[in-house]
Length: 470
Image 1 (cartoon, rainbow, N blue to C red):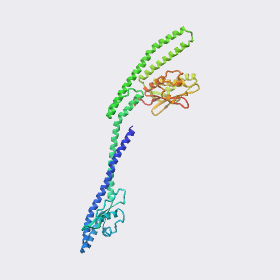
Image 2 (cartoon, one colour):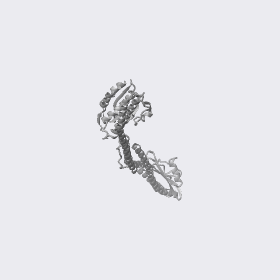
Image 3 (cartoon, rainbow, N blue to C red):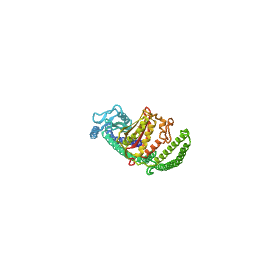
Image 4 (cartoon, rainbow, N blue to C red):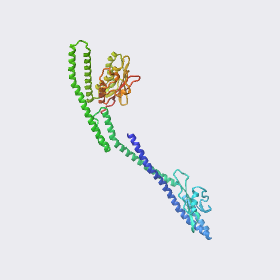
């Protein structure tokens, strides 16, 4: 869940920061350019005042007109030399009254021409288009009118290089980017803390639920930390787990007590049947049928008692040689397999350790191998193999019997369940349930799958590391 929630928060925070940073960067660039434009307007006002003196002197025929024009030209030249800004004063017919450098002319089209025409109309030219840091050849042209006696007689035009301005914009952008990166790191750290705070009780709840699902009924959640809603959920989960454990304990106690209490009356009943059989002719079919059903009921009661004890008892797990134990059980069942005409083989690694209760694992393997031999016809094979996965050691019992359908695989291992196609085979339907309970107490598991082209694969898995320390 954290892998999905954290990227979502990061994307949202990045979107918010970009939504704030982008307008800030644009505003910074516009502010730097406006600063340059205002400076050029101020400079143009000073040159326009000088140009008014020149035009006024020329219009009145004063002898100082040429001197004033030279003074204006010197001012423009010093300005251009000092700042590197092209500047010129142009008459209405585009002829230059003075300019620096001397070869500079107004553009015949584009933004420069439009600014000149606006100044001729008595208005200051509109702000030039924004120049961005990547526009290496960008220029800023600003035009202001020279007004004498209410008439526009000339235009002061300046064309500024943008290298310094673009450098300042880029520097400001780098500062903004650094600030956004720092804010993103802080936001990412905050998101980590937030997701940890929110999801920690969820992970704890998930682990506890998994523990109960795998048979560790004492799993509980510490209702501390996290949002109040999750704390309430943790308390509710603990109450539910307590109730479920209590109900299961009552169920186990009832099954154990009922099984134990029924064994004595059943034993007495079977004894009376044996005594009655002595009074009847030998080979009486009714007596034989009653005797078989009595023995079957005895087996069911024994299995119920074993199941109740298996679900109640705690496993005494230790580091066990799973390969050697599996080989021992194969050797023990081989005479029975040969009697049925079934080949029972053991393969895989013989020295492979895992954590298990040796007695419980032996009982589970006995039940699984017995089940495989029971359903495998003569001439076929039952293979017991031992292998290691990443975190478990697996003992796989694969038979060549009729197998189970997909629907039956979902129910195999349930108490008293037996396939409708195999009701004629001896059994109580509790053996695999007992095996699963014995394995679950030690952190093991029992799973089933088909064994193509026909048959069943039963996988007994135990952990490779001590589950009490993980």
